[in-house]
Image (cartoon, rainbow, N blue to C red; front, side, top):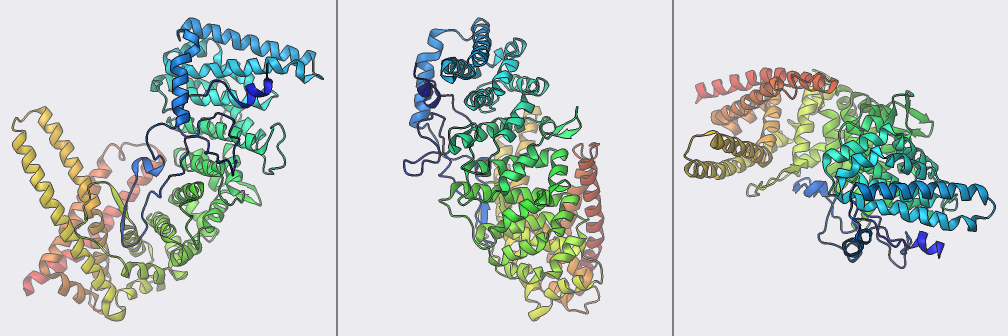
Length: 640
C-alpha cells in the first residue's frame, strides 16, 4: 500500500463545506494542489457596500460573504463520487453506523499497539495509520443521515473521534476535526435539532476543549517552524479546519460563552487570545486564516459577554491588548482601501471594522477605544482613506457617539478637529430623490446626520465644544443650516414619492382582499410592516435625524441671537415647521411603543435594561425639543 498516496491524495473527497480552502494557482501554490479539500474560492468577492458619502449602497445578500452559483468541477466530482460509490452500496442505518464505529475503535487500538511495539520503526505502523485515516473519512457520509447523530453519540462516536484528535500524527488529528466540521455544518442537510444535539455533546464530551487546545498546538508564526507538519501549507490547512468547526458552533445560539470560557475550571479557553494573536501577525497580502480569525472574532464578540471581557478588559501581555490590536489592524487602511483583487484583504478589512463597531458600542470598549486614541485614528481615516474606509469610519463613529453616555467621546471628537472633517463631508452630501428603495439600504449620509445629532445630545451645555458645533451652522451666512434644510426638502420629496407608490399598492391590496377575516388581517399586517421598512429606508429615518438637528438648532437659538432661528423659519415656513413637529411626534410614539414592547420592557438582561434606559432618555430629549418646534410653528401661524 502506498501510504504517502493515502495521506496526500485522499481517495474520498469530503462533502462540500460552507466555505472552501482558497484556490491554488500553479504559480502561487499557497496550498498543495494534490490535497482534495473543497476549494470553493471566494475570490470573486465584491465589496458589500458602496462608500461614496453622497451615494447610497446596498447590503449584498448574506452580508456580502458568499458569491457565485453552481458547482465547481471538483464539487461535482465529489457529489458524483458519493452518488456512485456511497459506501459501496451499504445502507446508511444503525447497523452501518455500529459497523463503522467498531472499525474505528479497532483501527485506533491496532495503531496504538503497533506504535508502542514499533516505536523506533515508523514504517511498520504507517499502514495502520493509513487505514485509520480512511475509516475516519468514511463518516463524512453521515451528514446525509443526521437522524443517526443520537445513535452516534450513544455509541461513543465522539469519544472515538476525540481519541483521534489527540493522535501524534497531525494528519489523523486534522482529518478527525475535518469530519467533525462536516457533521456540524449548518449548511449541510442535517436537521437543526440533530445538529444542536451533536454540538451540545461536543462540549459535554470534551471534544471542543481538545479542538481549541489543538488550535494552540498548531499555532506557528514562523513559516520555517512547521513542527508536526510536512509543510507550512499543511499547518495552515489544519488551522483552517479547526476554525471551520468553531464557526459551525457560532451558528447556533447558546454555545458561544462555553466556547470562550470554561466555567467548570473558571478560566478562559484560550480561543479569544489565539484569535487576537493570529490577527495581529503582520501579513501582506492577508492570508485566508488571518481573515478567518477576524471573521470569527467579529461573530463571537457580540454573542458573548465573556468574549467581550476578554477582548476589552483583559491584558494578555504588554504587546497584546484586544482593543489596541484591533485599532492597529484598522490603522493599516488609514490611507488606502484594500485592492479588489486582494480577496482576503478586503474581507479582513470589513470584518475588522465590524469588530471595532461592536467594541465601541460597549461602554468599557468605548473607554479603551478613547484611551488608545481611536477617535484620532478615525478622523485621520475620514481625511485620508479610500471610499470604503471613510464609510466604515462614519459607521464606527456613529456607534461610538450614539449612546447618551458617550460624552467623553464626543468631546474628544470636537477637540481633535473632527468637526472640520465631518462638515466637509456634510457639505458634499447629495440625495437622489428618484432613487428607489426596494431593498434595505444604508447610507453614510445617514451616519453623518446621526453623528451631528449625537454631538448635540452629548456635548455639555454652554461648553466650548457645544459652541463650536453651533458655530458651524452660523458661519458663512448659515450655509450649513441652509444645506440641511435643502437636504430635508429633497428627502421629504423622495418620501412623498414613495408614499404615493405605497398608497397605490395599499389600495390594490384592499380591493383584491375584500373578505375581512384573520387571513386578511395577517396579510395586511405583513404589508404594513413591509411599508414601514420601505419608508424607513426610503428617507424616514434620515428625515427623523434631520428634524432632531433642526429642533436642537431652534432650542439653542431660542432668542434668535445667532440668526439660526430666522433662517429656519424663513426656509421652512409654518407648514414646514408643522411637518417637523409631526415627524418628531410620530418618532416619539414609535419609541414609546418600543419601550413597552416585550423585546425591551420584559427583558431582564443587562442589555435589555440598557436599551430601555437609552430609549427612555431619547423620549425625554425629543419631548423637550418638540416644545421648541411647537412654539415656533404656532408663532409662524400667527404671523402668517
